[in-house]
Length: 201
Ligand SMILES: [Zn+2]
Image (cartoon, rainbow, N blue to C red; front, top):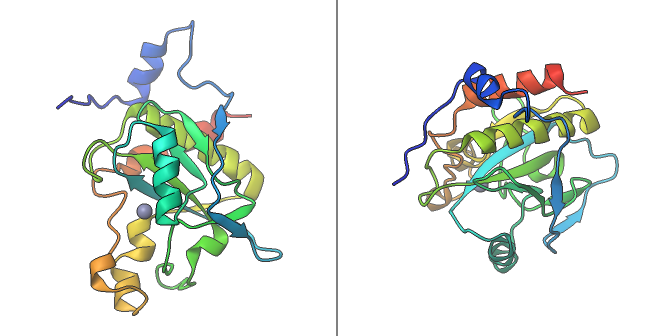
């Protein structure tokens, strides 16, 4: 299996040289809309971003088809190489969190109503590590979403559809969500996000 070498932010900046900075400010989002969505409630405010990981499928067409069959969706999907696809426009509700509940003391249920869902393609197993390109694209996408919606709270699917949801009777134990998993590096994500928040116009 290919080993991923973690890079620090400083190293990434140093590697980027002066010809092609890794922190480009232009954000490329390819649209590949699927039919799994519904209207948001009137005056719904997006204040949460749920991060997911999905098993490795090396084709956006295949993933879109898989989601359609399963009756699920996310707003965005980020490939291993960091390409961003919009599957559902964030103005609509996507079906990504399922039966869910915000952590105490928020406790709001049906998190889809007020959140944006972002899927990261995992390598083989759902809980494998993520690439530098994915952290970069994720952070840049989140800056874009915060500019549109105001500050967001970031949580993993497991935070809203894991133990909390099971303990509160929203989900059966066998449907306990674990993604994005222990290999998602929240520290790295926040560090990259802070970098882009402070440097992106
Ligand atoms: Zn998920």
